[in-house]
Length: 188
Image 1 (tube, rainbow, N blue to C red):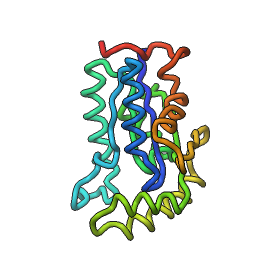
Image 2: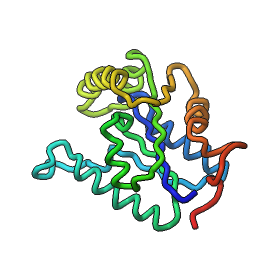
Image 3: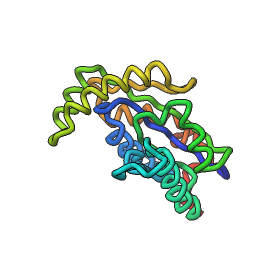
Image 4: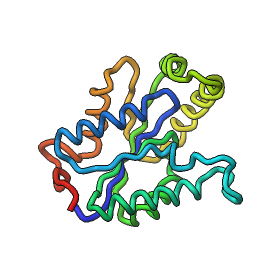
């Protein structure tokens, strides 16, 4: 495979993006599929926001570009990227600029009910951010449902084992299994 491909795993807070991303990585490792993984939440975590970049979009793209360049230089062509809003149409440009105009994009929107997301967030958020995360999760779930890019694969997470969810996500990529072409090799 000559061109890069990215799997975007989006979804509301508490849906399991990071957990599913790591399980997808484990399944790909088991199939000897070369890949890299980035938690997009960390690409723009600076305070205060850079001058002229109040939403941290420029710093996020700059960091993604630099990190991907390091992976690509070592021969990696598949990237797993987890971030709440990565499946929105406006994110496409960032990945095309960071990874190349021919980048293949697979979008997966993980979904969960309000009750499931709340239960997960209550178990996860031990600091002062719980109420903020709960309100944001509900708001982002509605936004993602309404605005996810065409062709986004939706995968429900309620009451399911993470390995089963990850298998469904991997299947959406075509990177592993009997019909995969050009992915089951290490970096060149």
